[in-house]
Length: 99
Image 1 (cartoon, rainbow, N blue to C red):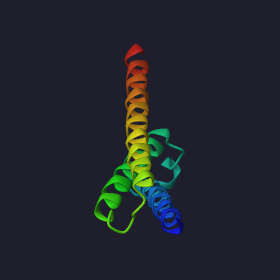
Image 2 (image 1 turned 90 degrees about the vertical axis):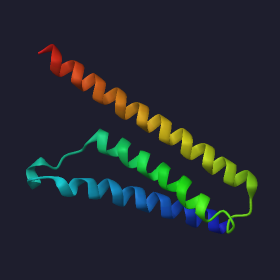
Image 3 (image 1 turned 135 degrees about the vertical axis):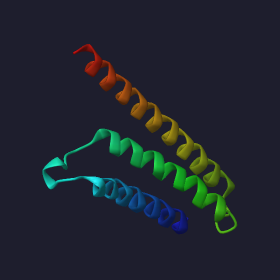
Image 4 (image 1 turned 180 degrees about the horizontal axis):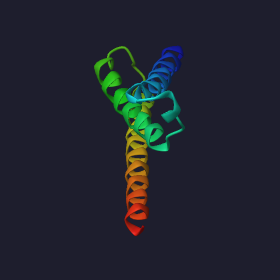
């Protein structure tokens, strides 16, 4: 079971690093501020990475029930985060168009 906690730590660390890396394309330090869209997109990438990494390392992780739970959880996080990102973008566009 310890290796599953290590897997979770790898995914969480990578997701946080990807969130931080998205700020590298910022022109000036003054433009760096909290971005909910970047957070949702980091979760999309983290969930995708969890599925891909677990699929490649499936022979190392023998507990079928936990593997299925990870796949299902990652798919749910992917769908939820993508939906929230799309809903946020749509609402922002609607607010801009109303002006």
